[in-house]
Image (cartoon, rainbow, N blue to C red):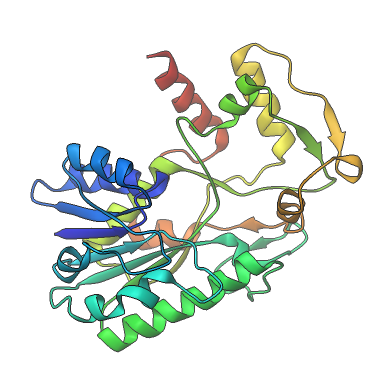
Length: 290
């Protein structure tokens, strides 16, 4: 297996870790936005290339053409998906290509008033970011069909993990308990993303799947739970109506739904490593104390 990642960020690096656990022969290539990060990843045995999405990457062509598995973790821009825009010819020339994976978002669904939904729900995105994701998903479906290769689209919930959790915001003093009646958020531990990606790659899974945990929860409850684990007072509750927020922050509260993960668990025959935020935060806390 030669796995190529467009966007070697938080989720992709978790997938790299899991692919390496599962295979002694896997080789990893991918892109980052800066030369410094490329050098850092190269030292860890990753064939890293600079690609910022605005122009073709100068050095990545040969690695992409050699890839058997391509994972896409770059947000689309106003003109579409940057990998397709700038490196479609290299993908076309990847004669060993066996599988594609696209990291999308549960934001493509829009608002369902807190109801449970699955992959059959209509897509009614509520902002431009999610509109672009819907278009990018279809672009990759069209490309996969043209190439005759399976494509896994993972619609990811809000991502957290070691170094990017409620604990960090509480310690930094930036955590706020904004309360909107009935509001829940979907979330997923980054280690579950990494594990699911590796299993889907090995199975060359085909289809569109949600990836969130088993228990969508009000954000203020998650903060209070994390504060109790740290032995600190949680920040005071702030009514949503009076909370000061950027337009982007406020947009997250416009979507309220509970996203089912049953399809991906059935497809891979698994349960999640961290089925709720409680197990996920406990694992992060334990690693922090190690």
